[in-house]
Image (tube, rainbow, N blue to C red; front, side, top):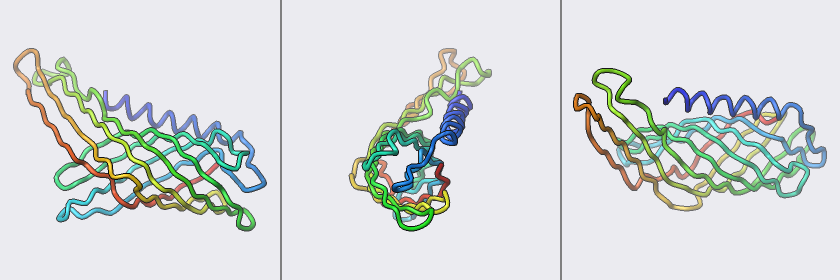
Length: 202
């Protein structure tokens, strides 16, 4: 099941990329139709600082406007102390783009992200000692985003605006009594304060 979630994520990125190639760029302030980016933040396990590593795809709905609204879909690996899990993110962004010179522009805006877990990652019938395992991840946060786009390459930074924390639950149950049975909860998971982005805008 986990493979299906990952396949759905990458198919979404491919569809976004393919459609982006067919869109024109606003010559007034060079607004891309979409972007694919790599996200990274540093953490400190000793002080239990949150860190992530992942990918994010974005799609701008109205690139011809002064204030551009976009949709976001991402996949991240998050570490916080002894906690280490994967998560999906979906959200919205509002950006203002400014032209600099040539093929370069910079942007500033706000993004809101909502997080979800991997769902059902194992079923009791998968093997003799398997259990029904479900991962849930709930949380949301807002970020201030800014960056530079030069010759389609995007370099950006995000700063955490809100201080919401997330919750993670891992539940395992085997109705046949031969697999594992447990319920694991982890609360108070923060997002990193700063996230660095590098990617390609279309």
